[in-house]
Amino acid sequence: MHGFALALLPVLIPAGDCSMRLDRVADAPQFESFRAAPRRVVRPAALDLAGREVRARRSLLAAQSAQGPNFAGDYTIVAWGCGAACTAFAIVDARTGRAYFPPDLSAVRTMNVGDHGPDRPLRYNALRFAPDSRLLVVLGAAEGQPAREGAAFYEWTGRALRLVRFVPRAQLCGR
Image (cartoon, rainbow, N blue to C red; front, side):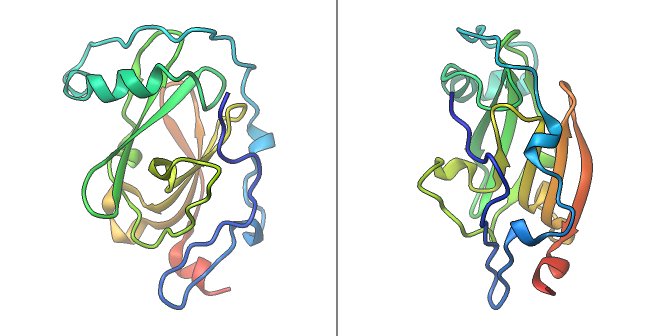
């Protein structure tokens, strides 16, 4: 089991003269408030190849999801590069092999995200998540849109992401 954020610990978002610790965001949603059912999958299901987007990335999705769930109990977050300072993500259900491509994760601009902790792979630089929580924190600009740059807190519903809270970069820098 591998998780990459068990609490909102010191996480810096540097951008020129801007640095903010997420653990100082007032009333930030916490991983323990979004507990997921305990992991049930011992061996991930084969990737469900239904859909053009899945078939286009089948090798990458299959390889990363075969490592087992790392998010919200039975799900695996899969990441790939989509350009300079850009990462895209999918969420694969380890029980069914079905892949989900939430629009907010289609191209996360990570230009101002700079903490590369040794406790998680670089491909997850823009995300904070835990294997036993449905909370997903996205650092950067969702869908590559500069106006959406900041920290977005989402709840995974099992099929989609539901925005719980968004803290714009300007507020992160203004403290």
